[in-house]
Image 1 (tube, one colour):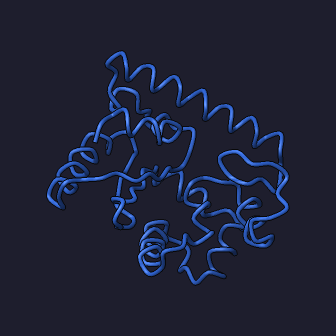
Image 2 (image 1 turned 60 degrees about the vertical axis):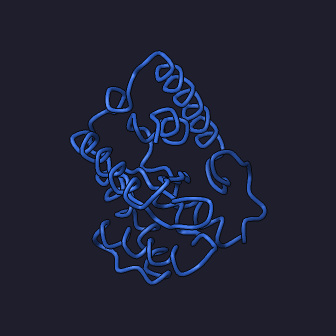
Length: 183
C-alpha cells in the first residue's frame, strides 16, 4: 500500500484532525495484507494511530485507520453512548466497540449506520441520519448534516485542504510517518 493511497483517504486522521477514516485496499495475498498492516502499525503506533481490517469482499479489504485515544473520547459522548447501546454495543470500552463494529460489518453487506461515530462524525448527525433514514438533511459533505451546518462545512473544507496538502507533500517525498502527528 502506498503512502499516496493512505493519504488520499486518511489525511485528516493522519495529522490528528479526525478520529478515523475507512478505505478499500487490494492485496495480492493474506500474507501481503498481514505484513503491510503490521509494518504500518509498527511505524504509526508511536503517533497514536492504528490500522485494522474491518471487512473483506471481492473488491478488497475495508481498512480502518484511527486514533484510539480520540475514539475513546468520542464514544464517551452521552448521545453516542445511547445510540451504541441501542444498537447492542457493550459501551465503556472503545476497543470492545471496535470489535463489535467488525462483527456487525462482517455479518451484513450493509453498513451499520452507527459507523459514523467511529469516524468522528457528530453524534447529532449520526442520529439524524438514522432517524431520518438518510433523508431531509441540511447539507451533504463528508457526511450528511442534520445539526450545525456552518461548523460541518468548515470541517469539510478543513479536511479537503488537509488532504490536498498531504498529497502534495507525499508527491515531494514526504512519508506518512513523517506527516503523522502524535496525539
